[in-house]
Length: 295
Image (cartoon, rainbow, N blue to C red; front, side):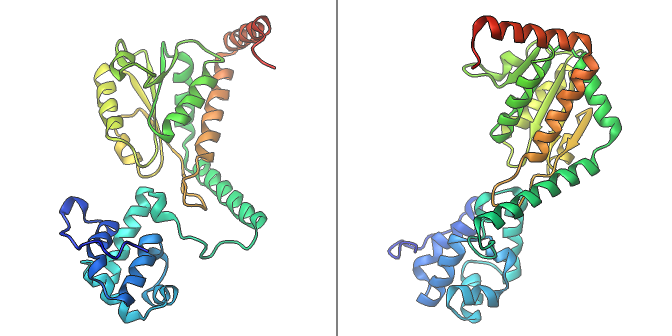
């Protein structure tokens, strides 16, 4: 339950989201509407999936109390509040995507089966939407570029790290940005038309990502963008844009389709490189033996 002693305050336009409205108005709500506010504050995503009547039943209040609460929070209607929540879900906020135990499978095994089935659907939807020409062009570029620079932030940085480490097994000149203890400028310096930047940016992208893409564009380097459907429109400067679906069964985005695609791209690049790629892998394996670094 929210703190009852909190004073109501004004809501600024910059902080007028659902959670801010509940915090600002909670103390002035009557008990029946506080029960509704408690439910909304804990699981705002239910506004997108439940009717006012269903929400009232979950909160132990009346439909009228739900309607009054929504209006006291500053929304013209229940539909207006629902639209805001759906926009937050489209943006990818896990807090707004979490529906709690409502509608959850009854056992861990059935929950895992549903989770895995949803991930398989993501892979299928991603594969169906990818163009063969983009895949072929991206593979040839990854094989023939002077430098291949991977760029990503937050979860996308983890994907970029995985892909860069795998590609480095079959070719040299592979880098991951931003590097630890270095500025982005140092990594972008010297880029040119002979180079490829793999820009991985899934939803909830940081502002620095777009700034980095603008800087890359000015260098003349070609860009391979790997993103989700919400980022495809922002990749107009990319020579290739490969879109992966990431909205799975849980409150957290799923990157199985992205991992599948990245693994595929590296494998295809290795085939494109042929003997040169195999020679590099062979040398790496020889060094592993000499160093004894793998057990």
